[in-house]
Image (cartoon, rainbow, N blue to C red):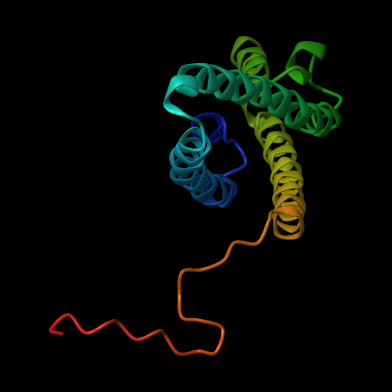
Length: 167
């Protein structure tokens, strides 16, 4: 998405910077979270079940990705389809790439920024939906995950004394 926004971002440099500055931390966070999450999930399984657990984990990840793309692509497409002006042919309302192709063929490049602006507005809606989903997920995780006991000092606040090794 970032490459598309940077390549076709006719919304101007400010729009490209705004969008990429929001997408970059999300991508980094996803990258840093996936490996520990998958390792933690697989570490709970006995070694003889690691293969089937890995297969199930990958299947759930792929299905989740496909459903997530569909759920986030819908508001993006809806906002983008509402954005292109009346001058744009029907094909230009399908995607930013189609708008660029139509503009290149018709030679109507001055009107092209409207398509890029519509795309950036759609991405803003998608990012807000992602933010809301992340907040709801964090609240559910905090409320539903079991509390674990720490291996720290005893409830009285003082750690038990170690036995004397010299006696």
